[in-house]
Length: 287
Ligand SMILES: NC(=O)c1ccc[n+]([C@@H]2O[C@H](COP(=O)([O-])OP(=O)(O)OC[C@H]3O[C@@H](n4cnc5c(N)ncnc54)[C@H](O)[C@@H]3O)[C@@H](O)[C@H]2O)c1
Image 1 (cartoon, rainbow, N blue to C red):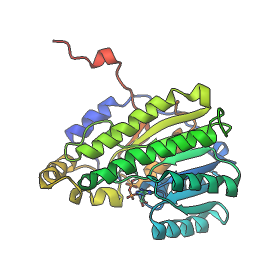
Image 2: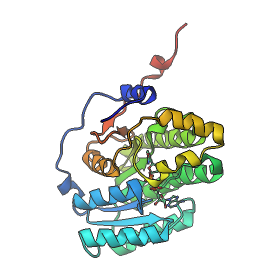
Image 3: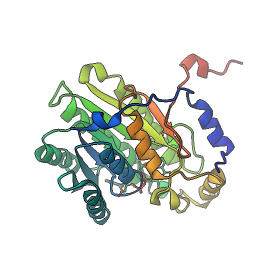
Image 4: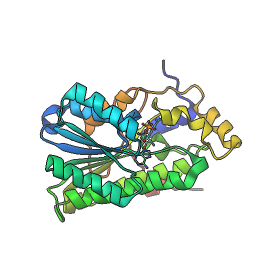
């Protein structure tokens, strides 16, 4: 079923061979409230479904796309009941708008335990917007998450999950700017992970492999120019697009066990794996 091209094979060689322990997630998500950006479609919507299925008490979906967001909330309400989900229209690049989504969540549900920075785009032709959305949105979401959840400010601790990509672990030559943004999210998550003891907020990164969604299905039209498009098509030729539910379910499996600053990878509808980064001295090429 699954054919790994050489580049993806290289990425899977990075993956630590340790599988996450199986845990009873349901109890752990019970009573918790989450704010999820980009939850109106694709991977975000699957994360919403999976968290609610596994006992999450309430969820705010913050997304720029009003009609998809409204539709998503209608579906989630039908599946999980009234009063469990709320949509806030918001552009993650706008600090005031994202801050309002946090305040709205606290006003409505009275607590906040989990922030998932998932909103993103893959369009190197509009790279300023891509950088603002992917890096800016994730950074603003992380800083607000710390402000509202850190024990050093207004909170009681919590979890921040930053959704990056396989392209944050290995470069995609067809999408150099998207690659830059995903490496940025991985770096931010690793660095903020180092503050856990002080803040009580666990930050970690989650990197899906290629996953069915509007973003990936239209990506070939959104390269810098046609030369990059050709390269991208060669890079992904024969690759398997996993179902977004594998990403949502995978994230639920590791939310308790993931260590602060750790980076996780899920591809081909498989189990999530923690990424092992080599020590600096092992990265140096000796002549
Ligand atoms: N699909 C893949 O192959 C893949 C692989 C790895 C990582 N990812 C990452 O997963 C995340 C979700 O992507 P997806 O594949 O589900 O794509 P998608 O296009 O289906 O979903 C992205 C969501 O983000 C929202 N969004 C975009 N810009 C926004 C903004 N400025 N403010 C608020 N919301 C905004 C969109 O409206 C949409 O609902 C992205 O960060 C993407 O980089 C995707």
